[in-house]
Image (cartoon, rainbow, N blue to C red):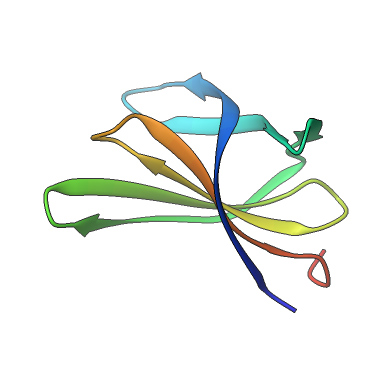
Length: 84
């Protein structure tokens, strides 16, 4: 069952080529989650802000990470522990 989280998190990313981002791990609740797979990514605009969405898996759950390119912050939007 999908759970809305909406918490700011710390994310490690690899930049490039170009201006592409690839998240490799994130911290949530003092636990480091290694990203094993990016299952999907998309972007959308919210007013003047561009939001980059990443659906990622650590092998235990599916997470939606969102990067706000205007505010330069990452958020854990949701988690689905049943989708691995």
